[in-house]
Length: 93
Image 1 (cartoon, rainbow, N blue to C red):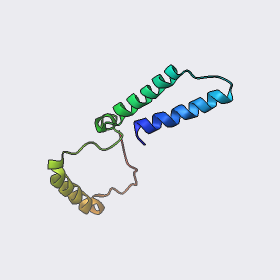
Image 2 (cartoon, rainbow, N blue to C red):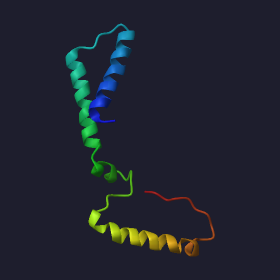
Image 3 (cartoon, helix red, strand yellow):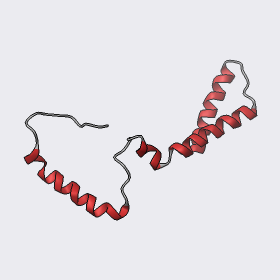
Image 4 (spheres, one colour):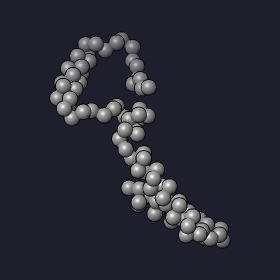
């Protein structure tokens, strides 16, 4: 869902809630609400935003794809031999 669609859906839900409670929502406030949602999606939709917060494993330069894939395949081919005797989960930062 993009920012525009999210802004419309959230504004519609909020407007319906206010109407049920007997309140009105001025057009200027609706526009400001939609604008804030669109801005948030614009900022947080950037791949660097997510990777800076360690929500993923980073951004790979396309020129490094072959090298990184080769390294990953080499590591997983050695994994059974290098596995410690204990069982551990995945450690993340």
